[in-house]
Image 1 (cartoon, helix red, strand yellow):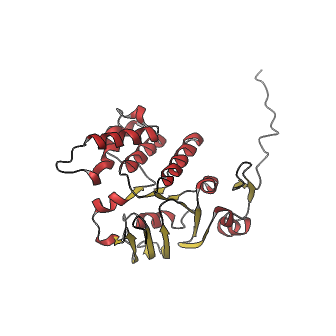
Image 2 (tube, rainbow, N blue to C red):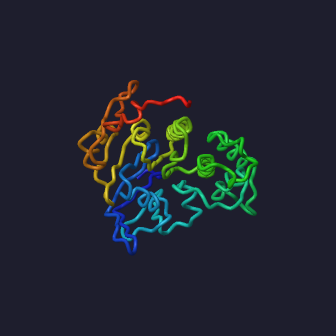
Image 3 (tube, rainbow, N blue to C red):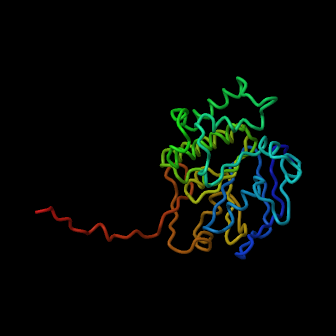
Length: 274
């Protein structure tokens, strides 16, 4: 096993009281790849990622990080290898943006916990990479949802982890920042980081992922390259009818569109006020 690899081995999980369960699931994440995790709402994507990050412990099975059982690792050890960005980035205390990003250096701090020049340079780089340096002196609770999401990504990147686990990292972002964040993830992966990204945006998943895991009702139902997974038969089975697939004009990757769009607004007659 690569020393930077994370391996999820036949993990299961159930939530008390609602009957939902994650069935035995296995996958590995290696350096130098983006694994997109897709599927309809309630399919178990976030649960699987939270297990991989050590946020919740599986009912059965185990997670191996850098050759160690995650159950035997401290939070500092896990954070030194695995960076996790949750779907919900709200509820933080009233820290300044620069302070919130600096907290990502926690697993690397020595002694009294003060930032050294290297730590400061890492924080600065992460602010620039996520386009958040202009907010550095602002309270994190004064930011929009999309701005806060980018700040928390900067904090995760400041950990300098070997593996990134990102739960819908672009859900609150405009199209330009969506592309910028996925491009940044791609550039990081080229340096030897592995990234698993949960996303509902099938087009971003298609454009940037090396492979996809498709989940439904608590199970990984198939895995493979985007062009293998994003076809009508598989998507109709998972998401239902009403999906059209075309090829991206530049790279040929599959692009997903709704099969029909209502024309009800196109034929309206708008009268000028008297």
